[in-house]
Amino acid sequence: MASREFSLIDNYFKGKGHQRKDVVLGIGDDCALLSVNDNTLLAVTTDTLVSGVHFLADMDPRAIGHKAVAVNLSDLAAMGADQAWLSLALTLPDANDKWLAEFAGAVIEVCDYYGVTLVGGDTTRGPLSVTITAQGKIPAGKQLTRSGAKPGDWLYVTGSLGDAGLGLALLQGREEASSDHREYLINRHCYPTPRLLAGQALRGVASSAIDISDGLASDLGHILKASHCGANLFLDKLPLSQALLGTVSLEAAWHYALGAGDDYELLFTVPEAQKGALDTALAHCGVKHSCVGQLRGGEGISYLNHGQTVDLNVCGYEHNWS
Ligand code: ADP
Ligand code: MG
Image (cartoon, rainbow, N blue to C red; front, side):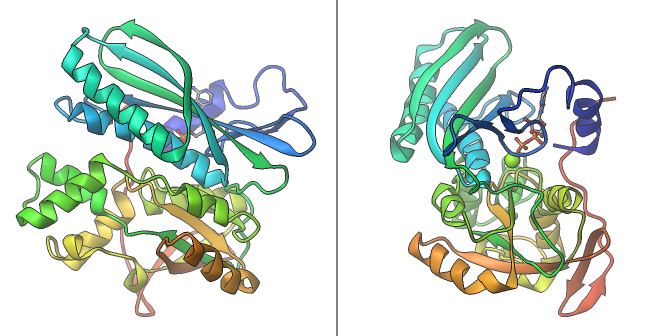
């Protein structure tokens, strides 16, 4: 989410009204954390996908169903939560059986894969939009938040970056790729993988975490702001897929990796003393991870390529409010 939207939330919603004592973490992170008992936190997140804004109007209904669930589970992953329940609020322009069968099939398939149960929702008529609330559990004190990073901590990402942004550009006809790269990149856009096992493995290892929904630069900005740090980002260490590098120039690939959203990889920080534990924890769940930078004092992001400063102007995804 972009800066204009954050000031809107801060102005009208954040910290307003009665504040219950069992709210461990309210507005401002990937999930809210609610104290259920002394041992367990409930993690809760809601994300909406609107036709024409978050997905192309003619997108495959299976991809819409998959993506709607995956982006919510990704927010649970970013807190280190164990996924448990979903609610689905669906607004439909009409009741099209084929569309619904494919959409619902994908929703249920992702739920089955991750052991999540759909427990409720709402169905209304109107312009197509999908809102999901996901809930999960975390042992109290083990949550990953955006605010725990310290200068000196190392910055990591899972998977590879920029593929989903290029996949969208291919769907929109803004770029062209060979047919095998095209299929991979479009799949990365339509069928993101929530990094749940990785998020859970990072409990007690990472000092902060967020999922990359708006681009690395924008989402790193949230960690830096919440943790009162700056960061050096190593462009030569960015994990870029063969498909991305085989389709666009290196500089364009950096921009897709840093500025285009929808990757749903995890971005997290690890203190020097935990680096060994990190490699062991993520090797157990088979998730690739790359060290892409280091936190420092001050603020903002400095971009370095093989140690040389690079002047980059990266823009994350921003809704148009004007
Ligand atoms: P994410 O990208 O991880 O889903 P967002 O950037 O969408 O998170 O939202 C940032 C924070 O603002 C989250 O804590 C979210 O719950 C909160 N938020 C967003 N919209 C509203 C709203 N209308 N009312 C209250 N809280 C909101
Ligand atoms: Mg998030």
